[in-house]
Length: 179
Image 1 (cartoon, rainbow, N blue to C red):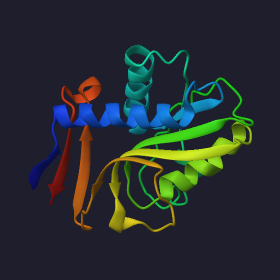
Image 2: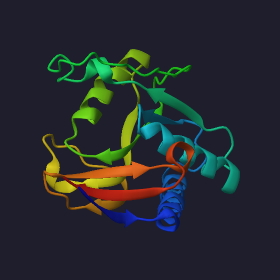
Image 3: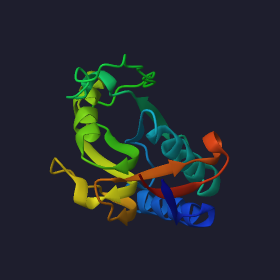
């Protein structure tokens, strides 16, 4: 197994600030905008962006929810291992709000399709956007594209993109892993 660094800590930080600025440009005061981190890996990115927006760009009171899509996936019955669901933490209605789904890597698009179905339990958003740190553009099974992307990566099928967060693994970094 080989591992190549795609983004180091400094590059991840620059990208996070660029993404935060793009969100501010589009949504300004965030009164009608909600960030939704897709469990499990999108939560680190969503929380980091919320922190940057509130503490470094003085954007007040951004609503953040965490959405578990485990039982909305089209492949959840196709595995022999028992599934472990994550907790959904959305304590507000999304009716007529602008929702921004946040995930670390956009691969096939199936997770986002599942999130589109799952969010309907909390109301009907007026608009849904997608923000991802890494866009694996040649791997899509569904016609889903991000509105905001940190970096586009051309990875072939036997390569995996691994995102590490300082909150979880001690460093911010993105790796391309080949088996």
